Figure 1 (cartoon, one colour):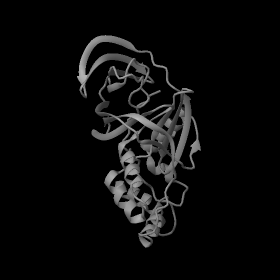
Figure 2: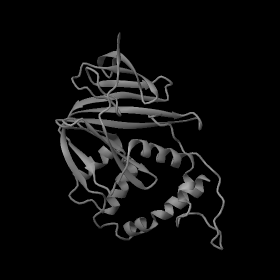
Figure 3: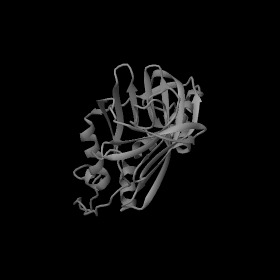
Figure 4: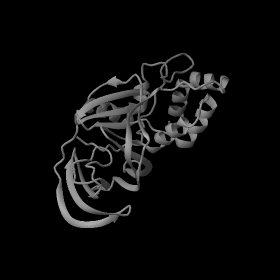
Length: 274
């Protein structure tokens, strides 16, 4: 089943891959990057997530870029890819293929507009890109006297319940009321956060000053709501083959009749449960 899904998705991109191989030395055509701010500080987090249904753990590096008016939280591989391309006068299809394989970027990200307290979430379901807007989440924190050191900073304990999960976080004296993902609202920058069930853990591994640009990728995003996006993503992850039904990618036999496929769950454990 896994091989079948991979094959079908591979077919969807065959024309792109063939074009790139045929024109390996031509400039790459990718989504335009738009600079929305300059970062003043960056915090890199190591993120681990567990899917207990599949008994599988996955690990990622993610980055929070803090600017004057906009903050971005996204994939560190995407950040490194953009940084590498920025140093090259021309990026060919061959160059991009090498960089993409090296950094394995993910395009999902969050932009927080601090002047308007608006949050923009950019996400993907299968091959479709989506965007939704929501107000910056207001989280009711309970502060504690407990302290510990994280990434070289003395941090204080705080707890909350947010969208179906209970969180335990450690925040520093760094004067930004921000943190990983959508966690925010404490007296200082959150350097560690873990769900009470330990399914989701964010740990800061680097905090640094920065002058790097904050970039946004321009795609033909479908506008949606948080609830609809989460539902669509859940439906896809629980049965990805169903998303291919009634499309040219649906598996068929030699006579063109649809082939039955078994339901197979993809890795999935959402940060938001409500």
